[in-house]
Amino acid sequence: MKLRMTFAFCLFSILLFSCSKEVPVYLSGEALIPLSDSARASSIGQNTKGDTLFYRFTEAQKESLSNASLSSKGVSLVLSLKKDESEKKETLTFYTGFLYEEDFLDDRKLMENMDARFQVSGVLSKEQLPAVDVALNFEVGSVPTGFFVKGEPGLKLLSVSFSDAVVGYDRRGAVPLYAFGPDGGGIDLRSSGFDFSSARKMFPAKNTSDSLLPKIVIEKASTPDIGTSSEQLCIRGAYSGEEFVIRCSPVSDTFTFQTSAFESSYGRLSFSSHGELVLCALLSANESLPVSASGGKVIYPLVSDIGLLFEYPQKNWRTEDYELFRWEEFPDVLIFDTANYDVQNQFFTRLAYFVEKTGYKGTFVSDSFILTAHGYNAHDYKADDLARFFTRAAQEGVRLNSHEILLREILIANNVIVQSGPDSYSAGKGSVISFSKESPSYLRYQLLAHEGWHGIYFGDEEFRDTVAMCYLMFDSVSMDFLQTYWETYESLQYDRSDEYLMRNEFMAYHLQQTVGQIADYFTTRAKWGSVQRSQKKNADYIVSTNAEAFTDTALFLSEYAFTRWGLVAGRVWNISR
Image 1 (cartoon, rainbow, N blue to C red):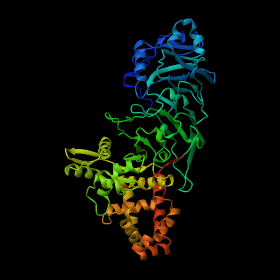
Image 2 (cartoon, rainbow, N blue to C red):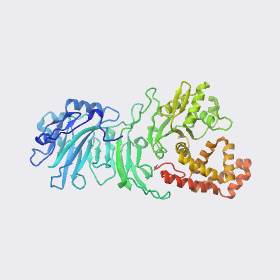
Image 3 (cartoon, rainbow, N blue to C red):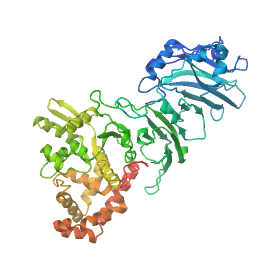
Image 4 (cartoon, rainbow, N blue to C red):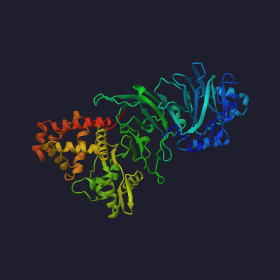
């Protein structure tokens, strides 16, 4: 979304007439009502009477403002201000803010009332800030009747427009944007932080069936050199008192923070290192619908980096059973976080046995089986397997549970599968991964790393080709150990004959933990009694070689992933808390 885009019904224009002192400023196709000599000239000059531009909205403009303020995206009033190049004074201070109906009851008191209405202040200068766009925002339910700009000679008002409601700053363009909440503030060119506290007066207080907390989009300057996998260039900061780290990536400079990911959704954003790289930090409404059109079911995801999900407050979920996300860096991947294993099992266990489990592939287990059998602690499925599952279920008359029916609705709504006939579904684009709040913290990190790598593998052909090369060159004894373990371990039971599955899991087991942990991970399993009984010769080989083949492969794949995405073994997220 271009944050400077105005609503279609709020296009503005400016007409400058060299032959007239009158310079009307237009908003929504109508000229604003000027209430001062300076306003009629849309500038403050040495010979202009007064130092304040007073404007009143027309009735149509006020109605447009009121209607837009009630939309899910809200509305900002954007003023484009400029320092006249002919003005010799180096700096020029200005103040601006809204005016309300009571301010216009007596025009003689406009100046008096204005002193109490100061909302935003700034200093224009030829070198640092010759022009600026200022976005003013008001508290929900308190629609202004006009606005003012007070300043010194040389201040010009170039245009006025509506935009979707935003708070924060955007320094990416030739003319920077500074957007302030109802409590206002001052433009600070030296700071890369911003106080978003007063945005709570513009946006919802919590996620509900018909409202959604806003997001903050942070964009940094491009950094071709992001460091090394062991010393990655990072931006460190805090929001509402909670610290975070943004790791610079070779593929993306934009990071979305859902304010619902924090205990306090409105607060101050600050940076403690490399904040100068941050060019844009804007809070705005989420584009996605909070729930489906009927039934209050959450079927549309929130965009987020995976790293913000581990400590995401469950109180801010849109439904008790689960929350749904779209992975920002890999947007074809949907992520389910479930309240517990029982909910996750209802969504995915029948699917797990149908797609992957030895002896069950292509069959449908019963509802009672789902209640007692173990699926997985976390899940991953690509689009064609999902389409095949729901097609076969429809054609064979399998009675799906309510969570599976909801899953199908979510997949269709997000184009992961497409209904191609009354009883048939075809693959769309993307995949699904899931994990659960019931998993302890240490396990959630490993599980989501594991499932995250699967999501990347599903969608990236070059990555699959690289994994295939490693797979084919891998030590044969170590490979036999790994596949026998997968096939015989009770909670896994992977189908060894499925080459795609074998390569996919080969990759994920190498990248689910750090390179330094991988030798201990596999030698520990090689010493388990069950593994010693099922494949003693292979297991002893892994112990005697200290899982060297696994470490070498993990190191290679980790360095590859860092070069491609800034990710490494054990970490598929670029934002950490």
